[in-house]
Amino acid sequence: MILDGQKYTIQLHDTAGQEEYDKIRQQFYKRADCFLLCYSIDNRVSFENASTKWIPEIKTNPPVPIVLLGTKLDNRKGKNNEVSTGEGDRLKRAINANSFVECSAKDYRNVELAIEEGVRACLMGVPEPEPEDSWACCKDALRCF
Image 1 (spheres, rainbow, N blue to C red):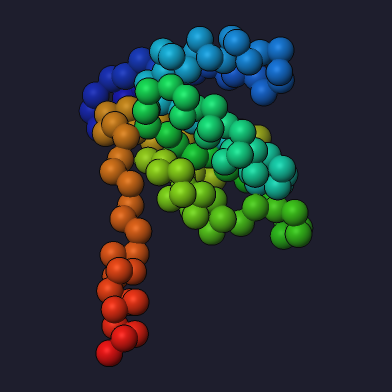
Image 2 (cartoon, rainbow, N blue to C red; image 1 turned 135 degrees about the vertical axis):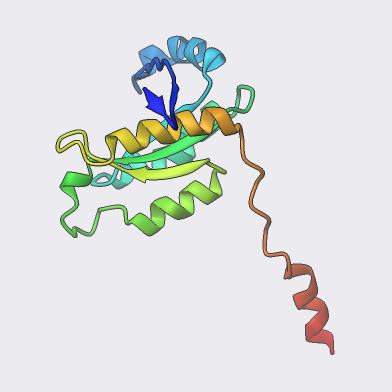
């Protein structure tokens, strides 16, 4: 891939989510330069697993950049169980991911952007966590006046 005039070689590993692959996944995690953490926007359980299953598993290894990907964008039809863009963006901040992209392999929407964000994340490294509400400590004090 060429990004900003520079050529990069990319190797992707799709680590299956089934239990029988747990030990194999750990071997891939140890050599990872970046995680593309995927959930399906039309499957709320998939979204919840990103933070309750996959992030804790990833965090057992040295920190590496994370790009959060909402997949199956072509399936967004306004159903109640769909994950909104706002929810994905909030999860991105909560897990301190480098970036968040919604994409569709079916119609190739934002697929190249997702890979580009992965390369950029590798180059940038793990971001500093966004500060909590910096005025939170002062809000309690201001209530006293």
